[in-house]
Length: 180
Image 1 (cartoon, one colour):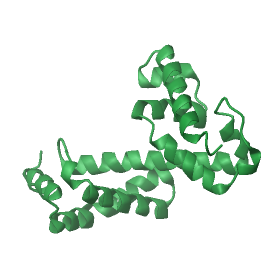
Image 2 (image 1 turned 180 degrees about the vertical axis):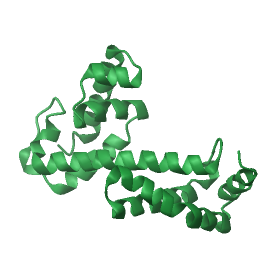
Image 3 (image 1 turned 90 degrees about the horizontal axis):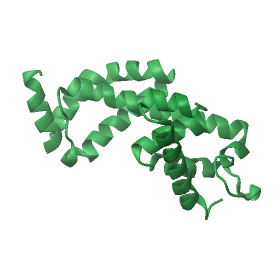
């Protein structure tokens, strides 16, 4: 660990604006380039990096960085980029076939309520799922992976994958039933 890291972490937790400025100046361009490798969208990458620094500021009281700050920032932007890609995939599915999203749920839908705002509501509810449940659900419902592929990739049993999918659908059905 770099000797400066303890100073940077302490500064992040205490809200030291100079530390944030230092990190932004020194790492933002590299983070944008790294994010662009995944998003293939420089403007989206810039926004994701800005969001990352905003979250660092907003969550400074509960911030706990193990190890060095630089790998933490790159890991965080990596995950933000993947989440952006998942959201983009949902939007593309919705634009191409709005009814497709409703096929994820085992209850009837009111076709008259299909509107663009609904996508954001569904995305928000998916993002509120427990982390592993969300991962399994997005891999299955959005990316179209088979249960066995998900199980292998995440190191879970197929039954556990099925349980996560059932739980995700149950949670989403409950949260979205008034809307749909």
